[in-house]
Image (cartoon, rainbow, N blue to C red; front, side, top):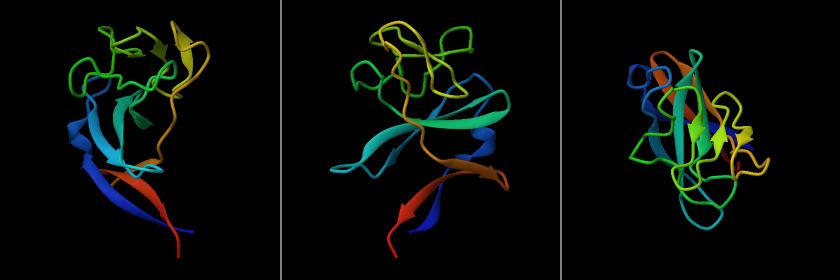
Amino acid sequence: MAARERLICESSALADGGTGIRFEVDGKEAPTSAFVVRFGGKVHAYLNRCGHIPLEMDWQPGRFFDTSGLYLVCATHGALYAPESGRCLGGRCDGKGLVSVPVVERDGGIYLIESESE
């Protein structure tokens, strides 16, 4: 399998602990919502699904962090996740973390790494 990259956004669009950028990835049956955020100076991307019940997490479009900017929070269930790993930290996620999405940041852009069959 070969990989290709697709631009999600410019690097300057993401502030540490700030608003994330929503995008879509190819799902098994249909496109799936995902998001990318910056935390600790690095970008992290996940499917936009709570680990408890697969509902979208943002409480307003692109708003994935709690008010402190330290944790990702599910707007429906209040589950908390570590932004750098997607690990469940508490709440109704019951130990089920977020599903990561491969991204890379370089040359002023953030790119989704997509797999494709040769």
